[in-house]
Amino acid sequence: MADIVPFPRSAPANHPEPLWRHLLGDQLRRRRHDRSETLTETAEKAGVSPQYLSEVERGRKEPSSEMIAAIAGALDTNLLELTSAVAGELRGTAAPASARAAGFALAA
Image (cartoon, rainbow, N blue to C red):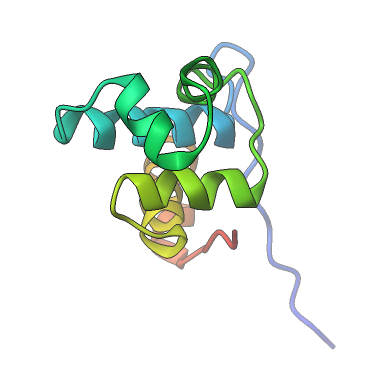
C-alpha cells in the first residue's frame, strides 16, 4: 500500500501564493535591467512589441512557451535557466520550510 504524502496547505488569504506569471515577469525585468537594456531594445531582439514585453514583465500577460523562449533568447539565457530561477523564487516564497526540506520540485 502506498504512503499518503500530505501537500502543504495553501497560503493564508492575507498571504496569497504568488502567480507564475508575476515571478516570471520579475525575473525577466531583473535580467533586462542587469543588462542595462530598455524595453524597446529587448523587445526588438525578441521580436515582440515593447508594450507586450512590458505587460509580460508586469505579470499581466500569460505568454506562450514560444514567447518566453524568444524573450529569454533576447536576454542571452534559455528556458531551463529562466524557469529554474523562477521555480527557485516560487519555492522560496510560497513553500513552507518543511516542504522545501522535503525536496518538492516544480516542473515547467
